[in-house]
Length: 154
Image (cartoon, rainbow, N blue to C red; front, side, top):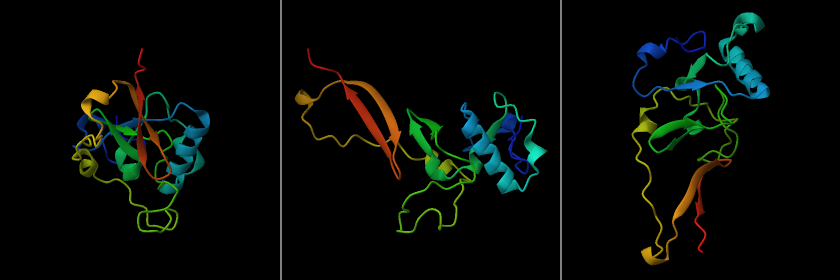
C-alpha cells in the first residue's frame, strides 16, 4: 500500500525511517477537508480521489507540518485537527502569522523523533506530590499542553 497523495512515492510496505502513516479522520467534514487539501496541493481533478477508502487508505507524515505531531509514550501522534498541506493558524514563533509564512512541511520526521520526552520540571517535594490518575494532551493554538488528572485524597 502506498500513500494516498498521487505524487508521493512512500510505500508503507517499505516505509522509510522517520516517516509515519496516518488514517483519515472518522468525521465526514474532516475527511472532505483532507481530500480538498490533497486535491488543491496536487492540482487534481475532483474525481481523481473518488475511489478513496477512508478505512483502508493512509497518508504519510511528509504531507503534514512538523507542528501537527506530538509524542505520547514514545509514539508519534497526529493532532486531531491537523490537515495535510496546511500550516496551523496562529502566531508564528518569529512574530509572523502562519498564513503569511512559507509552509514548512515535514519532510523528515526524524528531527521530531529524536526529541526525548521532556523531563518533569515539578519542584513540589516528593512527600506532597499526588499520584497521577490520568494523563492526556491538549493542543492549544500554538503549543501542546500536558494535562494531569490527580488522584483524589481519601
